[in-house]
Length: 450
Image (cartoon, rainbow, N blue to C red; front, side):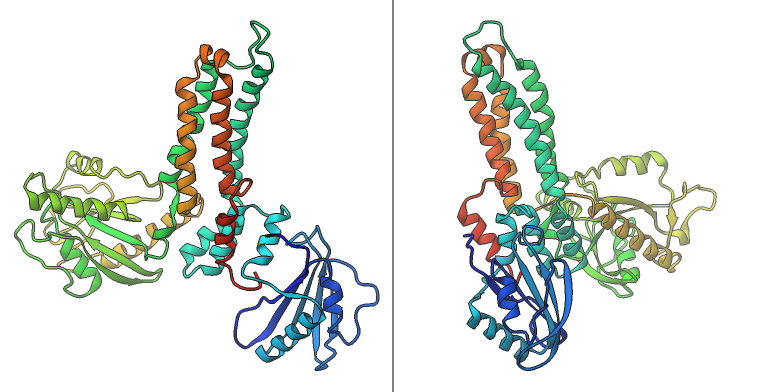
């Protein structure tokens, strides 16, 4: 996939703009760039920008020069920044191709950076995700990936496994010497236990790419007839959900978009908790559970006369594996709340009179933004990452199960082979070991000129 020829491409966005960029990379990048100039720099230096002009038409431009390996691709790079006329950019490209450069393919600049060791595969995926980001959530996750967070995490786990493997293989070299041992079975199991736990938990606590294109989700839950649907209608300013004094009116999860100062937020009204084991109740509870799993914020709505024990019991039923999930308790029906009952700092609102609804909106926005801040520190994992992590656990668990002192003495090469296989799988995530078809699929999703 890596070639030594010089590539060129228009690297700025399609369409007209104030400035456009034409980029070259390869051993003749400077030479080809100079060929389209009226007067090249007399003594060009890497890391410098030069005010020059095109030979034809005679328009001013800025020339930036970088010398490999101290460049993004690891090769010599020349970048022409000129007026962003599509016709002009195309004309310059034609001249560069005539001079001997080759039109770059999708993602070829980033692919060269990868193959020259300037970035790893997860950082390359982060660049692609940044280009494709359609909202702030996707952009933050892509930035985390591009900045190397997953690469650093994978490297740390791989180094821990490699340490165990090195001690195990050292023991293999001394199998003919009785009593020589570099690591015991108990030590192997102890070290692997923490590694396996970290790899197993990571996908549960990581950002899911398939959820990043959705609006932040707030789920209102609680026991039947506490006024969840009434609160949804009051927040939206319209009758989106059916309301009735009869408990259990809401049967399915109903959603609507709420405009806020922080952007659109999806409100989801779910059925109240029902302990009935009938088929309909079971389906209602399943729909409620699905909505809660997708929530960024849960608003637990309670009655004003609910005591702390009742509220605590309701909270206990809201366990959730996501570290970004936030839960707030809201007391509804302020219009009929007994004045002598304390609410322990919980926001007291009324869907009927509108009391404190503005404060509730502010609370929702604040909690959602706090969840997004927490999310920004989590690992972003796509389906490829998750699949390889699941596969890596299998040989690690096998070693942890079979690593007795007897097996270390009799069959250490089998245990070592499993550790090497786990390292290979982790290596595929970062690109240390990755099949050509995987690399091709990743880089082909890029734009031309990236």
